[in-house]
Image (cartoon, rainbow, N blue to C red):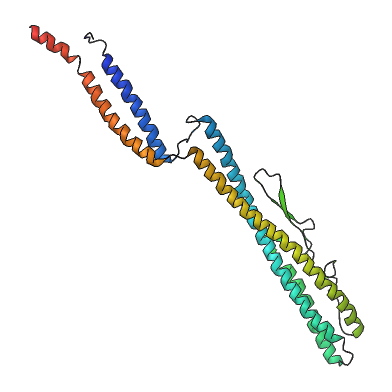
Length: 279
């Protein structure tokens, strides 16, 4: 190799190698810092795009899960209120059956009627309080029920149907003005009451099935989200044990590259020694 002060090929090669090592070292440090093998589209555009799409799905599923949690709460409140109403109807039957005794005095019959009407009033009170986040499925304020998103693409829904438990409606046929002050009125009330107890039980069974479906779907959505997140990790997460070993190796290479560059930069000094030797 000829000696020249204008071009130092050895130094240029050493510098290129040092720069390449520094680039690899920077990339490895980024992987360790972020925990990601692919953190931007320039690392691997195809894999990055797939991961981003899946992250969008996870975001959508998070919204779905939030809605399903709300659905569960609304359904649970409605079921609790409905079960209380069913128990009140059972208590009312005791009063109505007792009121059919023709031997009752007027005072006793009026006392039974007062208890009966108090239970009727309590049913209305329970319905008015069966609301969660402004949604009440028992007072017929939501005749179409409530629909909740079931998937990240917003293409399917799960439904909580309205169950109208107001007095004098199709499920509870007893009117708010019902009375048992006579055996005839008590007989009519008993017939309506027996039908109402069966209707309420059926309505609560339907609602319970829907709430259970929502709970099961909510569990599935949570597992699906976890699986997608794990899949993204398989695509883009860095193997930190491997990257740690690579970091140490590159740090050694960087130090050796710097020494090689330093040696190469000293080559022109040989020319000075040649001239000093000829003087």
